[in-house]
Length: 214
Ligand code: BG6
Ligand code: MG
Image 1 (tube, protein in one colour):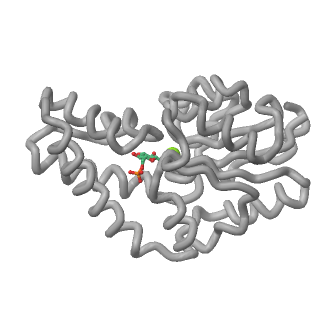
Image 2: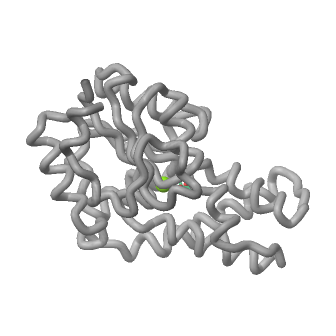
């Protein structure tokens, strides 16, 4: 029986996945590395430094640690600039209503984001109180596709992993949820998210009745 719903943040609750892409694209352009939305799929859900390493790998660029750290900081500054313009109305349409309906159904609600900016994003959106627990990138050692973040979220919700459903827009996130032994709803395209138990185009498309069947 499903007892908890765990949401990813970027690309599931709000369109910050776009801001991550734009900031990485800007860095790639500066460095002369070809980078498009298809390449960006590999960066979704993984940590900042791992994302940078994937980007540098695309350009076959090798750099020392301090230089890589400086580039990651630069990308983050651009990302934070985009984020600071966000307001409560930027939450994806229908998501607040979905969370209200889930709460009515007595499901516990968790947020599990690889982003170290997640606390600031939920604060700007005014949604921090909607979650029974929030786990962000600063609280884990291994990021998605490792299951650590989802297992920690389930533990904090005091729910067995097998009773959790994860909403994810990243291939790495779907893999992490499945490795955690959870059901997974992919938000986006079945091309990237085919390993999820269900793929929907938008978070708000989810039909609550399905939870009784899982
Ligand atoms: C994830 C995003 O939520 O957070 C990734 O999908 C991002 O694209 C990762 O790299 C880390 O984010 P941040 O804000 O800590 O750089
Ligand atoms: Mg995401």
